[in-house]
Image 1 (cartoon, rainbow, N blue to C red):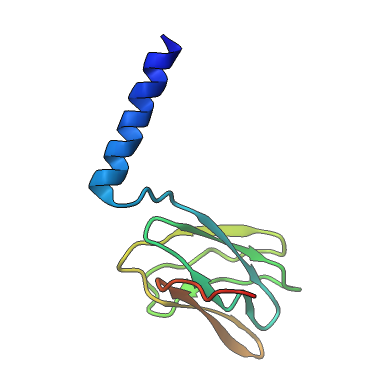
Image 2: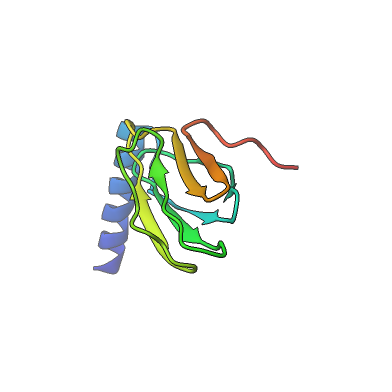
Length: 115
C-alpha cells in the first residue's frame, strides 16, 4: 500500500509540474521597521507571499501602502503586522516619525544574486 501511495504522489507531482511549469509555494518575508528606515529596503516577492513587518524602533509605528489601500494599527515595539501580497499590491509602503516619513519597496522582480 505505501508503494502505491508514493507512486500516486509522484505521478501527481509530475503532472502538477508539467501543467504549471513550476511548483511555487508562498513564502514569508520579514521586514524590520527601524527608527528611520525599513530593513530590507526592497522586499522581493511573488503574489501570494506574506510580508511580516516587525517594529524594532524606539516608539510606536504604523506601516501603510503609499496609496493607503492598506494600513497597520499602531505597532508598539516588538509588535508585528502581516500583509499578503497580490499582483495588484502597491509597490511602495511607508512609515513616519516626528522627524519625517521613510519608505520601503515591494518588487516582483527576481532578487539580485549575492556573491
